[in-house]
Length: 432
Image (cartoon, rainbow, N blue to C red; front, side):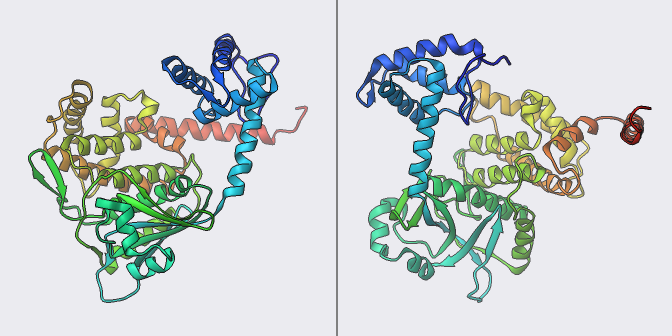
């Protein structure tokens, strides 16, 4: 990609040369529309904001556009390079505000997780650098301080008529409630995926009039509470994904299995690592298990399979996704010679739902099969992460998995030969 010959660089990016004429027109239009601190909202403005965001490859948000345009008007700026300079000033101002507002925050998530014993000791899980502690209502009330049960009812309305008996508590550092939740949400959803994976693979749904109702499982929260040093205590509504479940008890064996898996994800993983890929898939799996419509559950499970199959690397081709998933799903727990053909049929069902709006194309049996395939593939992916440590390793694994034994032997011999030759070249004295 060509770069501008003259530009004021920021810590984030610089404009591509071929976009500068269009960027200049957008900046001129936004500066003309600026009235004090407000830009008039209409279709052209919305498109201009989004265009700048797309052309910046995601480093520019709508809020930053508004701030940058205001600074440009104050400074008398008008060019794309001056936009970058103003944007850097905007970012620095925003970062200073964030650091000033940052404080210790405690996130409390209602849950139905409990321990199947009379022991008063509640489980604690550590993963992805976050400590998630299950506690009872009395402990939660001590953390919340002044927020009483009556206050929760007034804030939550129909979402929390009665405070739940169990909570998950996580501590973090954040400047806003949204940032606090974003830091906790991913580890929390990974934990949900791990618990679902460890649970006995039985039918977790009841079907009624095209809807799937969970009759057991981990509850997806409809809200969370935040207690912070700067903002006090607040209540935030999340997507209402499900209703209340009965208490979800975990026995000692399940807790040990869950804790062992959590330890695999305990450190702050690198983005390129295979374990981070597995964590993303587990989070998807944990989030979608409480969907209520047949087609949403089907598409959610298929999304998990696409993530594991690295569908973005094969252009999202459904046939390739099926082939890759068939390779990693076959295991001791799932020995199906015709699994690939079954996945082809399910792939066509997915296309019917997505491209033709056939919401009733998926059946309960389809979902049960996809669920078992997801579970088998997730276990295999986590096992592969021990030796295939990066996403590039997984991509190569998929590329070579369709190669026959003879061809695979050739690849192995050529690889060893190249490694030997490169070692010789490195050791060869200079000047020879």
